[in-house]
Image 1 (spheres, rainbow, N blue to C red):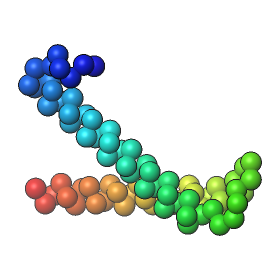
Image 2 (image 1 turned 30 degrees about the vertical axis):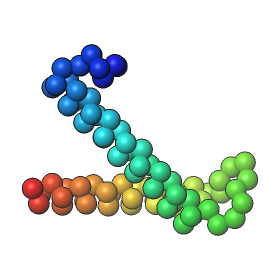
Image 3 (image 1 turned 45 degrees about the vertical axis):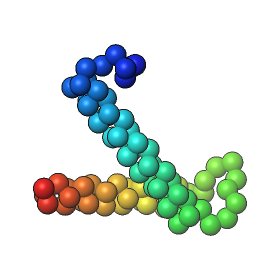
Image 4 (image 1 turned 90 degrees about the horizontal axis):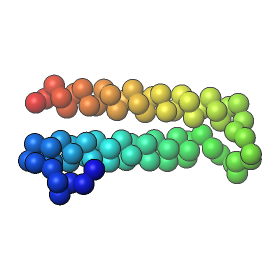
Length: 78
């Protein structure tokens, strides 16, 4: 999509979508970093151990749950 060919409403929608995409990318990067630091305690091999897999899964679920709670709290403030 070429932003220079968009009208004002389309440009606003395009920018909104790009902001959302950037926010999702930032959240994934933070989640990856936080969960990796918490769950991977030694040099990883070719596969994660079952405890690492379980830890990563639980960490990612908790991170997403907390992100939703925080987002809902901010939305209720407006």
